[in-house]
Amino acid sequence: EAGVVQSPRYKIIEKKQPVAFWCNPISGHNTLYWYLQNLGQGPELLIRYENEEAVDDSQLPKDRFSAERLKGVDSTLKIQPAELGDSAVYLCASSLGVGGGTYNEQFFGPGTRLTVL
Amino acid sequence: QKEVEQNSGPLSVPEGAIASLNCTYSDRVSQSFFWYRQYSGKSPELIMSIYSNGDKEDGRFTAQLNKASQYVSLLIRDSQPSDSATYLCAVNGGGADGLTFGKGTHLIIQP
Picture (tube, rainbow over the protein chains, first blue to last red):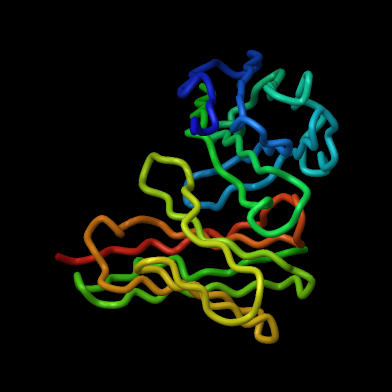
């Protein structure tokens, strides 16, 4: 079974430029998450999707960040404009979703390492 | 605010010994508990999940949960150098909620 796929793996941009990250979850996983991980810290949730609906975006800085999950499969996370403090690893994860127990186990993709100069 | 606390380490354990990793959480309504392993430069990898009080064993790994004490632990038996990594404790309120992570414990297995 293929895991969560993310691209690009690395991105270097100058501040004030836009950037987008793409995620393809594990086949059949209805719930998709975007997390941000800074060096030496655990991942922090940005947004959670149930199918195509964003059900928890309370931690997403909406002035510059946006996300979409068209057709309830792939998702894109965008930052516009990027700031120096946005340098981090952006992780996508997926789970089967509602059902309890192992349905809620989240599996992470390889991440996108963003460097803002 | 939900918090998950872990000792950042490094925790140094001789090869073949038992490594014991601990985690406490602040939100009493937390229902699901997970341990992830993260190698340097890699993404977190799920190694254990536990949902009820007591012990859960999987190979060399044992997760322990005590909801009354708001405490989760991970034991690694017969530690190997390949177990050297950062171990992240994560909790949520159950269901498909996002996870709240600790900062992780850096484990070093000494050959």
